[in-house]
Length: 286
Length: 224
Image (cartoon, rainbow over all chains, first blue to last red; front, side, top):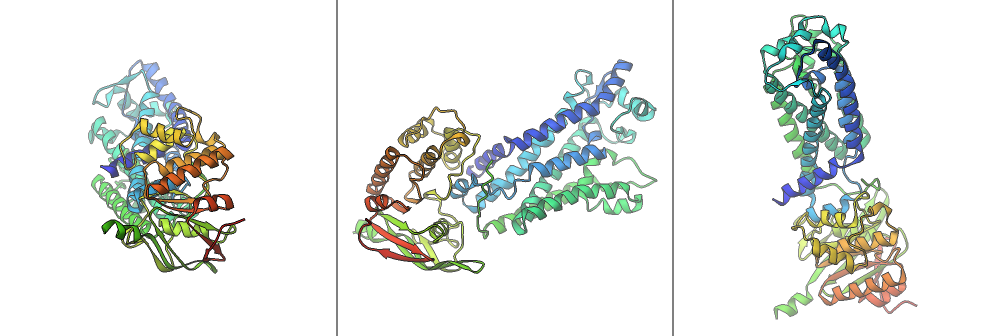
């Protein structure tokens, strides 16, 4: 109970800060800008659009890279040894403190991803269809030249309509994006503890930039590379769409298993390391 | 009989510890035994190793050699942090955008249930206005120091580790804090106090040690 309470308190601390606020504002403005062409289309055909566009947002390279850089930015206060933590560690002990940080990273990831998804919906209001159907508008956009005519900023993948309902795809995308964000945050924490903050930030940025190679490489290699680059899995809306005959994204069960096991392993390594580290406090208070 | 035995037990035992950072040997064969109901003063120049000693006692740093026992438990083996202690080390580290009350509440509720009335009384006891909404980042050094003292005493710990607790306090504040520490001593708390102020050391401490170049030596008599 005490542990859960500390995780909750740490999460509030991690969410209520200027970095998360900046990230939220940037995401809100970007979502508004990305949804403008869709809203124009909605207006011209006078037909509402499905609420489930978040998975398509995450499947477009510039938005995804912005989101991932944002995740690195909001986690850049690793190893969470700002001076204000001194009084916390004294009250929690090392293990509970480390678990609090890991839990805080997870809850912050949940909030950040849910907020992003909410922004994609809010910026479409009031012209949305609140049903569990893909609706005529997205179907039309996917199979006609509407995306080109209205200059859509994201691509609607037709094949996914027959694989998942909006609710299912939204759930899967949210889950995978939360796990990716948690993975990145915990990876940064781990690298920072074992090496230093510069390597942690550079390594995680490199992980985000790897997207560029995966996206641009030959589909056959893409399929192999995609197994080891978790950041690309946010493009789960493309899972049913073959590229030059190749389904290059790994299965959803593989993604979930990989991310869960990796997060679990890294958390164990963090707790092990925190048992022995020397606490040197950072004056850069939150 | 039990009480007599307990009185004679060491609450903190620092046994021949060494601590080196790269080539700089900061603590050399430091030994210190502290009992309940006493105030131990540590004096020494800046950089003499007082804060490192305190950090080792708190569990932030491991010792290269020797050991530290708190209530008979070895730091780093049987316990990993000095959790039953009120600590002030270095600059008071608080959440700068939060008020004094919210800072205290955050720390207090890590292990206790929230108690607004009690926390208000603690803030009042160190001379701070509990209802002040001003963020701690805008506090003067003296106010931050008072808040640091409040966080150190609020859980009624048995041990107090205080590194320059009077920093930035005005005369009245110093007088009030001295009274507070003497009351805590009377309640049987063990207090370790590092200070550059001779008057604090003379008035408060039962035993005084001087730290010089990593060596801790007991000092007899008072300071002029």
